[in-house]
Structures are given as C-alpha cells and as structure tokens.
Length: 416
Image (tube, rainbow, N blue to C red; front, side, top):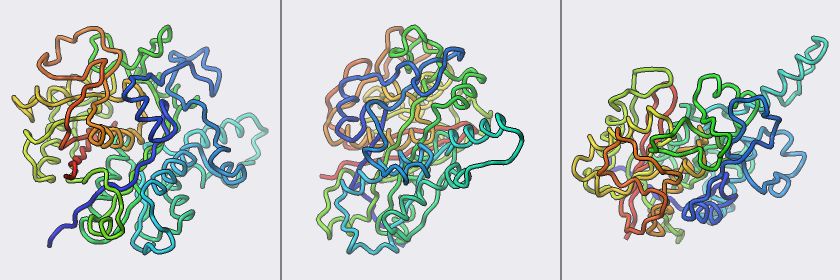
C-alpha cells in the first residue's frame, strides 16, 4: 500500500527556558541555562540541590483551580503544551472528524509527585488508609492523553508510550505510523514529565546519575565537555500536531516540516549504561535513515540525546561517526539538554520541537557550557559549541535514549 505523508502543523512547549514556543526558541538561540537551586522542596541535605524547574509559572494562569487539583503536574504540563499546539495548528474542532483524531503521549514516570505525597501522608498517619480518591487517576502514566482527549473530544487512538527517556520519541513514531497507514488524519503527540520531587532527586542521586555541581548549577549540564559529571533533571512538556499531508493542505494549514521516518532499537546491554561501542545507537540511526528513505549525506543536523554523562555522550558520538563516516564532520550536532536539562519522558518531544524550529529559522542552537576538550571525542565533529550557528537545514534528526536500552530516532524534512 502507498503510505500517507505526515507533516507537523502545530507546536507547543513548556520548558525550563520558556513557557511557550516563542520563549523556548529565544532561550535556545540565546544559550540560556535553565538550571537553578531547587525551590519545590528543601534540598539542603541532597547530593544535588539544583534542577531545571519551570520559571515564572503558575498553573492557575492556564487551568481552572478545581480542574488542576485533579491532575498531577505532569498532566497539567501536558494540557498546557497540547493546548498551545492545537491552537497553533488552527484546528477547527467543530468540523474536524474527531473519530480520526488521536492522542499518543509519552511519559517516562508519570505522576511521581502524587505517588510520593500520598505514601508520605499515609506514613505520617495512624495506619488508616485515608488516600485521596484521585490518587490513582492522578498517578497513572496514561492519564495525560486521557485528559487531552476528554477536553477536546478526540475519539481516535489514545494511549501513553513508556520507554523511559525515549518515551515521547516513541510516541511520535507511533503517531507517524498511525497516520501513514491511514488510520488517523491528525494525532496530538508529545510528552511531559514532572520528576523534580523528593523521590525523583533522591532516586537519581542514589544511582549517581545527576551532576553535583552545586557551586555552579547554571554550568552543570555540559554535554561533550571533559569535566561533565552527570545530567541535570528538568521538567515540562512538548507537543506536536502530526497531520496527514493532504488533510493539512485541504484546510490550508501552515506546515513546519514533514516527518519522514523513525527508527527504534535496543542496546540489549545494561539497565542504565549505554553499550560502550554505541551498537544500539548505530542501529537506531541506520533504522531511521532506512525508514525515511534517505542517505547519511542527506542529514544536516542532529539534536543528540547528549545528557552530559561520561559514558553516554562518548558512545553516541562514536555511533554518529560510524554511521555518517566522512559526512559526520559536515553535520551540525548539538545537545539542547545543555540548556533545558533532561526532561526524561518529555525529552524527545521538546528536542523534536527544537529540531523543527532550527530548520524553520535556519539556526542551530548551541551546546552551552563547553570549556574542556574530551580526548575521547572525535575532534572533527561540529558540536555547535557555545554559539548558535546559521545554516540551511533540509533534514534533521533527533536522538532519544532511555534506561533499559531503549533507543528512538526521528527524522524531519523541510518542505520547499
């Protein structure tokens, strides 16, 4: 069968460096760090006392107080970003066939704060099980797309993908395939996460995953730098409207880019560490190129997973050198996690948005905080260090990997 073409017609973002698409893009191109001391709880006794929290954000500016109290923060973030994307796409909700509009959303953890608070409240009591009736509906990872579909009446496929930090990239690939196969006209996709909590920070600290650069948090997320010491935890959401090309054309929609392919693979190596030779990453990028029907030399830009961990950054860049060969030096490679921190299940979504905006504006955002060369990294690679670079981008790829060895890669093409 002839596969349908799929395009992006709407974008939404709620990030540590901007609470909407315009603010997010300004933060990216200006190299703004979203890292700062934690304000959500007293982190004085934690190994890491900073994170990339949302700034100047009040949920009451977006969602009714009664409604918001029935949602964990990760769902609130999903609602806000998806609303922006739906408005940006200028979808006419009165005329669209809602049976052919789906919501496929990613979340690596889901309602961690809700779970944490309910258990702590129980532990403080006399043993009586006085749990909030909204405990389970607030906590479960699939509730975010449920709320989105209920609000807008979308009656197509509705579920959450969970593959740790690859979750929202998985969601985008599932959305791509549902539309390609003709099952849907439009899918609201993306991801959200709200793990800057006592349990989130404590858990990641216990496994030595986080940077402990408490004296200089703004510079703690430093992908590819020799002195990197772990990732910085972030929060927020990214949303994208995927739409069948002819459907978008028929309603005169603006089109940001075409989604031309997606790849998936597994490291099959370790619970948390990447394969040292990047075998799973090599496989996922090759799978994406094949699925997109493009050659390595067609790629102009790669937004890497680039978490600022000692092992992960080296393995990913080794894989890029292996897959792209001599052309690798012609690719603008960056890691926007240097600014946003790591949004876990939402990372793939906000980084896909960053890739699409880079294509639209002809500017690759920088990888900030780089000061010391890592001798284990190929010096011929253009890592877009510290300063944004102008260039025409016809094809961009976005890599996202997760604990458990989950790898996802999505490819976008600029339409002429």
